[in-house]
Length: 64
Image (cartoon, rainbow, N blue to C red; front, side, top):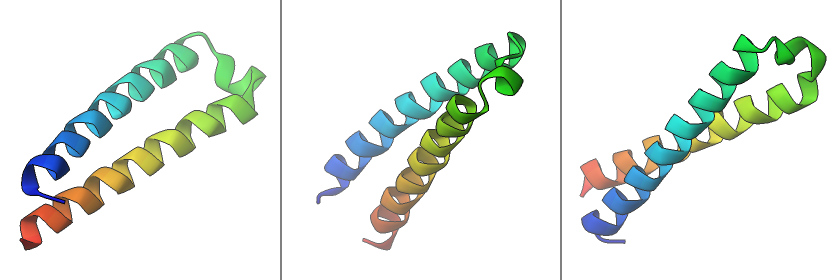
């Protein structure tokens, strides 16, 4: 992948991270993490995965 392609993926992952963080915040504000723990956990997994992928693309880009 080129640096531009990595940057595009990084930007798209940032959008996923932002949206997931907002959803988690709304989830917590509504007190749903206790009522729907499996769904809450899925949101945390999505966030963790997106951050890890973004970090990897950044690392690869910096190693170029």
